[in-house]
Length: 466
Image 1 (cartoon, rainbow, N blue to C red):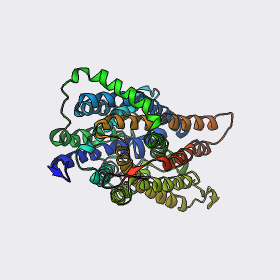
Image 2 (spheres, one colour):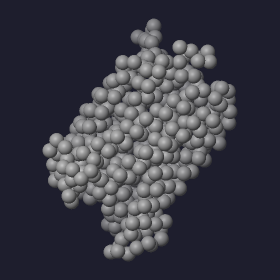
Image 3 (cartoon, rainbow, N blue to C red):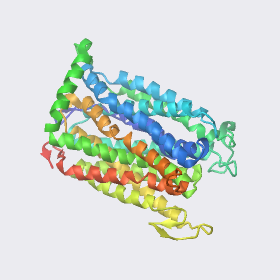
Image 4 (cartoon, rainbow, N blue to C red):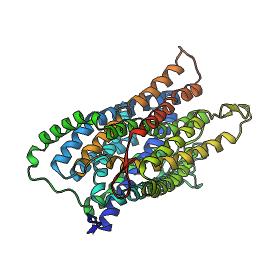
């Protein structure tokens, strides 16, 4: 089919591509943010501060691997043609990593296997997204990319929401009552004492992904294999080398990659450590963190959908800019909120307690979800504006590089800062060490915002704009 003289994929193919976000979002919702990560920090690691430190190291190693290899693989894929074989290979790696998380039992002595599984799942899922995202410009005309990306992200957030409700409502029992959020015994005989409901988030993520990624393989068209695919590796590497040499002279493209490197690293760190922070500083249970996640996913779906419409009306650059400002303010609110303080002002004695910190944290989470959904959807279309159609996979590889080049620095900085301030050198409490440890997120957001004035985007008709 054609639209405006440009190729359009049929509705079934487009919706099947959108289902990838639905399939993958539980990994970010259940594993990275709201269930497994805080469970790991609060129950598997020796203490929450040490858990935050170790999680930072694992995320940093995974990010470094992605940063070093994604541009090369993206360039090779562009030279070869099809993306689905790459998606399949990395999906297998991600699914295996998620399945292995089941073996993260409370208080276990050796954490190497669990941390290796975290790295595997992160690398597999992130790379699968790189190659799936690169299929987007071939599905609809440029004028509809913003809406497509926003709607796809919104669908993904709904998938994360459904998966989170399944875990909290039917599988994860609360340690004090042994019952789930819905007040029932965990399904399948999952044992609350050994936290099997929380651990089951890994296998559930793997099964969910396998089921819902299949339509994309069946019905979304892929790029045809190029006639001279035998030399794809050499051609891809040569083209990547030319792009890297030329990149500094392309101010808009280069500025976008560096800007996104900072603000996406900040967003990923905020997602990764938000649940861990709530568990350690506010003392929230996994169920309370899960409710927080439900709120964030609902607003994330709304934000992504609305951001896609705003992208089409005002351009992706404005959506990204406004989202960064909101996320920075929310990050300050999170850091300044403890069991007794809000915005660094004491609201209750430690013994008395107050519900205000919880309420403030929920509001901040809602805003983070909305702004996070908008910025991620708009970033995909803003990247497409920077490159020609034939180099999209390479661009998403560089996009992954820009997002991961500092992604290992962010988590590692959080891990190192948390460990340092919790050590005997400074002697901070575990709570204060966690608060100080996540402050680099604010700096990264502001650095990304400072570079956006040099980035250009196109309007709906495809012409260049500011």
